[in-house]
Amino acid sequence: MWYLSVPFLLAGIMHIFCAGIAKYGRKDFDNHHPRQWMSKFDGYRARANAAQANTLESLPFFYASALFALYMQVDYQGLACLLWIWIICRVVYIYAYIKDMATFRSIVWFVALCVNITLLFSASFFPAL
Image (cartoon, rainbow, N blue to C red; front, side):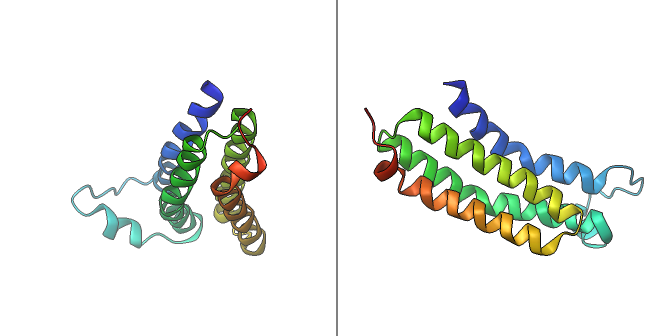
């Protein structure tokens, strides 16, 4: 069952990597006002911070859809496939966001959204045996 657990874990910690990219190498960290400090970022650091926020915003729909699919007893292999596709989409999305590939990033975001919708209705596509 690790193939179902690992995507849940990766989705939950993905934003930490975005924050690390945004903060890495900065010596002027302000732990008293970290959000104000990060709001002054520009370039790839600002985009990494925005990717962090978007990653956190995407989690409720992802978790709700995946948990609903588990509740509906969807075939685990089909579910695992969708979970991993979503993770791959989000990794590509973060990369595209940081590299300022705006149109490509939007396309990948839309694909991840479609994966979430497919997860939500996955009982129709991958019924339990």
